[in-house]
Length: 68
Length: 265
Image (cartoon, rainbow over all chains, first blue to last red; front, side, top):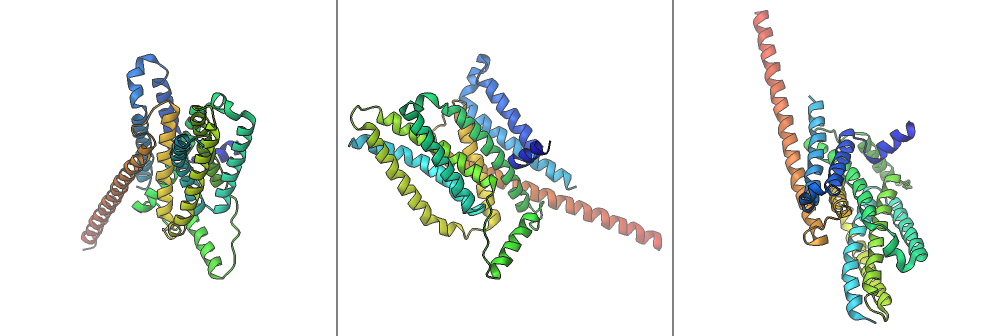
């Protein structure tokens, strides 16, 4: 358990960032594998930018709320 | 010597070297040079072993897109972690006098006493430098092999010469700009590192999915500007949020003291 915690702290140390990035990657993987989502493939990069900004905003929002 | 191939390989490799060197440079300045150079040399050794083992079959056996995706995801995680901390500091929500600042102060005191500091290896810095150099080094190897294989005579040699010259020039240019960079404040540098890691991470992760960015590698500066603007917006929002909370707290404490005065009178 200590090893997992150490890896988690080393890599990211923030649950919102970790979960957010994992969800974003899973969604992009789905878009790039399921043929029904093929029209969205051309926007993969831009969707990733939006997802990264959404994750950053979410984690900062939590910090701002936590300081209340 | 195939000049057309050498020039093409030089230009394409220079872009990759700049990308790798940017990460090595920021790790060296913000963490320490020992960790940054260890990562870079370890990556160069790994790269040499891979090339010596696989040779031109490298293009066939190394899944470069999968590698880009993994490195991209890790860089996004690292980048967001640093960016979050830097934005919180700029907005005043995270005190600058934290453990890291205390560590920096202690280091400054030691320096002021004239004692030397032996920088420790930081796994974070070593890994960052290693991944960036390995990925970009592989891309350079791909460029040399694919450009070089297009002609039968001296193709690989010409492409390798072009790539080597590009590498030497980029390292020399980096050594020149290293000194002015060390004068930039610590938090600003960490903010820049966060922006750079997130930008490179986004770029490589999307490429890992097979996405082709408009303008190719030239889109990286656009990503940097985009994340800078977004961060500026987030800092402004957090500052406004803090001031709004303080104003609310002042109003409520003023009304409580008025009530108390009324009770006493």
